[in-house]
Structures are given as structure tokens and as C-alpha cells.
Length: 350
Image 1 (cartoon, helix red, strand yellow):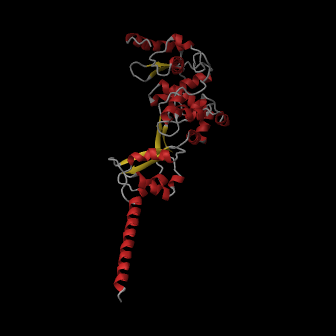
Image 2: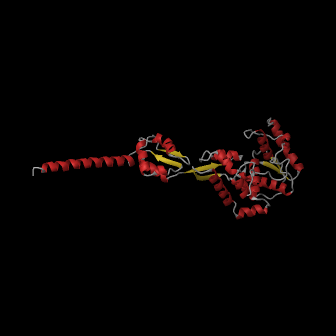
Image 3: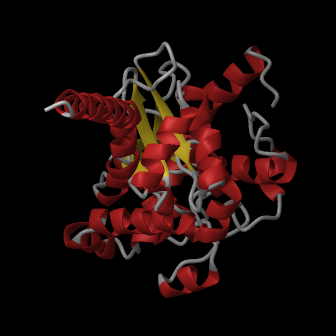
């Protein structure tokens, strides 16, 4: 019986030690997975993990936002996240634990909205899109102009611009250049359904040619209600095998020559002689590709153009943005005087 107190003491010390160790394990487990581990004042932040990222890049992206980086990477190793780091855009909320951060990084790659319109060239499109997704502008341009892609889809470096329809689209941030391009082609093919293709065919135009003509129409007038009339004029010229003589194509050639940042307020007679496949004053038919990214209203204005006998038009100075139309060249010259007089009065030379 003399040994009983000693035995009880051993049991007591053992129990205390066990509870201490258990408490330490529970604390460590809680601290590793469930304790708050964010260090920023905002309600949420976004981190971007590039494709092919390893541990070093992950540390670079997330270190500034953690209270305790050692517990985070302890949790990341135990959950084997470091063996499968996923590229993308991720949201980390204020107060997140390591477990919540890891769950976000593993399962919640956030989509981004990619919006583009009012684009003049393929290079501008690539620059705009690269601000939204991981792919840079050079890789996008390379993808757009890839020879196999162009050949497979009966496109060329001028006409490929037509497949990009202005709108808002949803992508993952880590979308590659080819993935972006291919989705745009899918959207283009969805838009050009059998009904629209039949309308284009009835005009003896391909979908690409419709977009090229729509790009000229859009640059002629900002007035949506007038676009079907303008489309009808150009279509009448095409049917008669007249040169389109569209000033927006000349503006495009001036910018080709002198830089696309140049603002052109007036086309001069000498500009009409600039040698370029886009200049419809010296070339018959449509240019080789769009001179602008036409929106849906411009494309529809070609497919549902107004039927009339007009062959000419000139800006109407009394109704800015609108035009005066004529069936004969004589009438057109008469209409043109009000515009040339207005240019002289306002001293607009270029």
C-alpha cells in the first residue's frame, strides 16, 4: 500500500503530461488550419498565380498578405497543395484561416469579364485583352496570325480581325492566347447562324465580307438609324461595279502611312491616291479586311440594308452625324457644296 501514492502520482503526472501534449497538438492543429491568418485592411484582395508557378512564385504572391507564413506553408504541405499549385485569379477575404485560403486557391479560380469594342486594329485588340487575362499582347498577336489557324478557317492576316465580335465575355484569368482566340472563333460561328448566312448569301457576300462592309458603314456614321441606308448605298455601288470611294478607308490608309494615333478631320484630294489595298478610291470592291471592329448594329445594318437607288451621300451640316443622299452625281455635287462651304467657314484643313 505504501507504493499506491507513488503510483497515483505517476498516473497524475502522466495524465497532466498527456493533456499538455494534447493541448499543444490541438493548439498547433487549430493554429495551422483554423486561426485567422490574413494581414490586410481591405475586405478582400485578389492574387494572381501565373501558369507554371512553383513554390517560390506562390510565396511571392501570398507572403505580403499573411500574418504567419510558416503556418500557411505547413498547412499547404500537409494538404499537398504545393504539389499542385493552380494558376488563376483567387479571392482572399479578411479574416480567412489557412484552410479557407487553401480552399480558395484549390477550388475557386475566379472568372474575369473581358470587354472590348471600338477597336481599330488587331494590335489594339491584343493590347486591350492582355489587360484582362494572363496572355500578353505579343502571344495574342502570334496566336491570331498563326498560319495553321488561318488556313484551317479560310482566313488571312487581314480578314481574321472579323472574327472578333465586340461584347463582354467571361474567361478565367489564366486563359492562354490560343484559348482566347478559339473561344472567339466559337462565338463568331454561333453568331453566324444559318439565318444570317442565308441573308449574306442572298447579297452575294460572305460573312467576312459583311463584316468588312459593316466596318466601313460604322466609320461613316455614328447614327445607328442611318446605317441601313449607308449600307444600301455601298451595296448599290458594288452591284454596279463602281469603286466604293469610301472616305473611312482613305483615313485608314493615312493612318497606315503616318501612324494610327494621328487624328484625321478631313480627307484631302492627294490622300485619295495613297497606294494601299485598303484604299477604295483606287481599288475596286471591298478592302481585304475590316478597317474597324464593327458592332452588331453595323453588321445587321448590312444584312438588313435599306433598298433604294442612292449612289452618293455627303455629310449634312445641319444634322451632325447624318448625311444627305443622292441618286445622281449632279445632285450629289449640289449637296456637297453645303459641306465644302462649312469646311471653309470653320477652317478645317486636315
